[in-house]
Image (cartoon, rainbow, N blue to C red; front, top):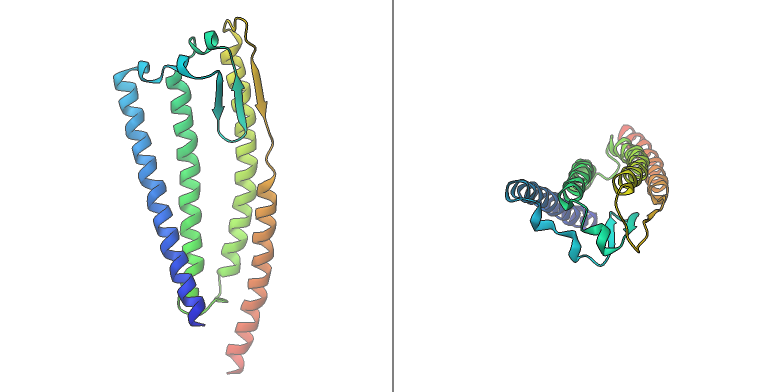
Length: 196
């Protein structure tokens, strides 16, 4: 039991550190965006890039150097920051839920009422987040295609790649499985408490 308490405390500290890291990084990005808007778009000259823009894990664009010079990098930078802030908000909320799951475990009560419900909630959020991210990436490709459609790509070509990511389903299934295991443990704990 003491080992579980110690591990739960360690995971709680880890979640707290990650929470603050994500929060501070988000604030720095917002400050950098404000500075970028004030100082001008010359800070993000895309002509120095090798011709491939990667926006997130699943969206990449291959362009000639001539086409890259025609793109305003500020729009892409701010779009990336907004994407990060949305993801950071969801991650911070999920870390708070995880810390609420770990709270009874730090006290030696892993099957406390409510743990299974929080795990199930994380499963549903995982599904919703996966659908939103895949739709966002699809819409992002369409928007970028329209922005880049009018560019003179010269000898280069416009190639966009969007990959659907289904890993969120595996994560959700695992969370639902753990939810059912913990719900059964909660019922056993309740029966045990009633007999004592």
